[in-house]
Image (cartoon, rainbow over all chains, first blue to last red; front, side):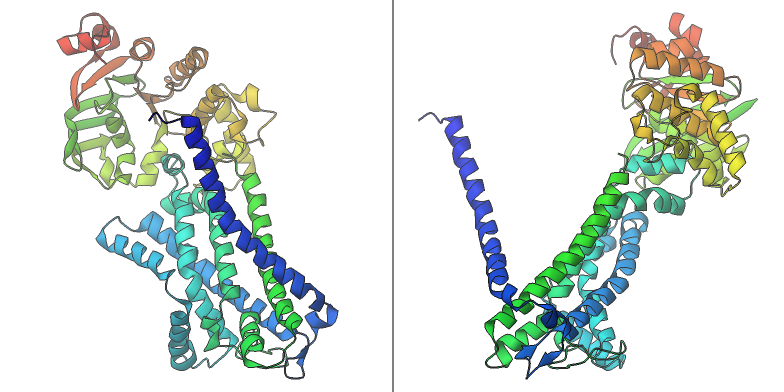
Length: 283
Length: 248
């Protein structure tokens, strides 16, 4: 039988469209349901009050603040270290078996289950460094969890800067570091920010790494220092969904919605910075 | 005066030889053009002179290259590259403004004097015959210039560092005949102040601008003589075959 290329193309398009819908529809549904069920709970008091009546009423302000601190702390810790490590790996390390193993290990680390990072954080920061269950321990644990994401995406961003730029810079008498600092890094920043956005979302949403290192079950006050425990949105959501009986459904969905919006907001900031920088990019 | 003395230069890429026993001299204030088919080693030779080959960990070099009597391996590599500038095959402006492209090399020497900087940039742009075309748009992106303008900008960028020698690596391969003519014209004027080594795929270009011409084939230097001699009575049959277009 002779194949009809137009028909083949139509079938292929149809299959690709179905595969896309298969992804888009559930995600869309989740968002719609969370908004539909959570929106009625959102009001000024919900966003700014402490939880009351055993978390069945009041607001979630301490959890919002806790998550903001944790994510901010994780980024402050992981972004500089991650970018520096990526610069070393892509610009300085020699291509050999060892460096290849290290790169592979870093990629694999981003696939390690988050509860393992939680245990690691507990052993290292909480117990060994005696930071206790604190914002510091939690932020460092989250930071270590998102390091591989930041390193891998930063490395890709650095490597995508054309070698010809490096050669031009060096041929004009610039040193290697001057070349990295003035040519390579500025052109890699949009890509580095993409990795940061991914890391940010992951740090904000994970429960397991903060479970042993920082999260308080119920702490109706704001943390006063980085050595305090804190509430955090994902863990709070877990608690009011499974540990506390008779919590109004709209409070649970409201909490989920706030978490979603918080991540969206942080991503938006990073995306705006990135698109501003891309506009400055001249090639 | 001799700028470069190359003695028995061998370069291998992994285990494949790229240059085999090349010995030659580059005299001051001449245009030495290197011709030959692709993979003949002429670009590898050029990139040895400013140590760009050193960036490739797979390349190994034996033999000696002296720049003004000093072994290039013993000269501080940043200093060497300031003295031996390079213009690449494609116009490769850096993703910066026109002004910053030319100022780049000077800035990398930690020269902060604003007046000196703007003067040097203007001087370099004039020397590369592009000042009149860009003087009103110095803060625009260098990518807004045409290909030929970009290549003359790249020449200005190289001149701004005040080199002694300029290496041209097929500088007109991406340009139309009119832009090519302007670049060649620029090169001929630059000869008075600088020493030029020109690698070109365009045999006619070598005939037009070169004082002496070197013919490379398969990593070997086949013949090096006055351009007129090479193009009229070459001593090697392979040189003759290449310039009359029997292969290439």
